[in-house]
Amino acid sequence: MKGDSSWRTLRPPRGRPERGSPWTHLIVVLVLVLCADVATAWAGLPQEVSFASLDGTPIKAWVFQPEVPARGTVVALHGCGGLYATLGSRTGQINARHQAMADMLVGEGYAVVFPDSLKPRGVSRLCLQKISERSIDQTARRSDALAALNWVAAQPWASASRIALLGWSHGGSAVLAATDARQSDVAAQAVRSRVAMAFYPGCSAARKSGYQPNARLVLLLGALDDWTAPGPCIELGRSVGAEVHVYPESHHDFDNPLGAVKHLPDVPNGTRPGQGVHAGPNARAREQAYARVRELLLAAFD
Image (cartoon, rainbow, N blue to C red; front, side):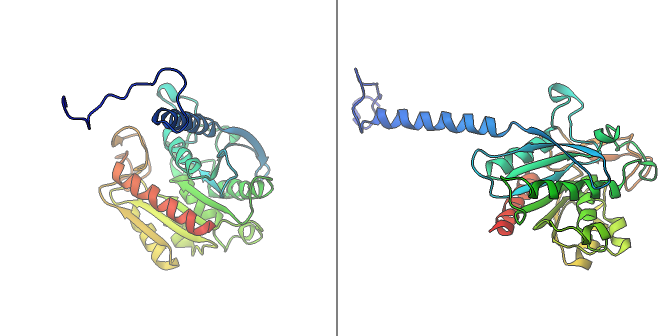
């Protein structure tokens, strides 16, 4: 305001800024911000690695690492749609849901490993196949997850005692499969996850088979999910003492950062076979679930 000495236009001084001047501090801040942006961009670039599944299948995986030594590692298991985007500018790249989780976790200082269970077995998607007709079942997913835990534990940048499992849908069911203490390969596994987090898994099979977790189990569910209904998971959580979160007004895929809730008529599975399912984001539920993931990892790796 004219005549008010508290409102002034800050102009750069002529010549070299003096040490301790406002412009010196401003330049330092700008440099630090630019450096942080560059570091974040590079941290988001994945490295391709490979290892053998416990069933012998050669598995390709993508590894995201922070710039500083990782506070821990999350093995993240994709759903029936696989790891990659199939539409738009991201086609063939890590899809938006997985990329968003990787960005969040790397930003918190964690490494993230995404094993691909489909393409190495000649499959691109499972979502449009009936569960009874799928060539890739939870036995295969369990073999991949356990092999991924072993691979992480052998890396010089990782700690075998600071690994977590996380998965979505079919991959959430794989989290259950890979932590089922009743399975002989799980029982024989030397490397275990500290916490197992499953976004909207299918829980019916685990509930009926007498599943017993070998790690702290956390289930993150959508109240309106008509693809993998929350009811069986709520019952499973109650029977094994798991932590269960049911997010209101949320469908399958509620943590996706892109798109809108859509009806998918071609999906043959779900609570109403033959009528399709619904899937899509709920921003509030996503932020709440992400916050809980951060809290769980802090507690697990403290």
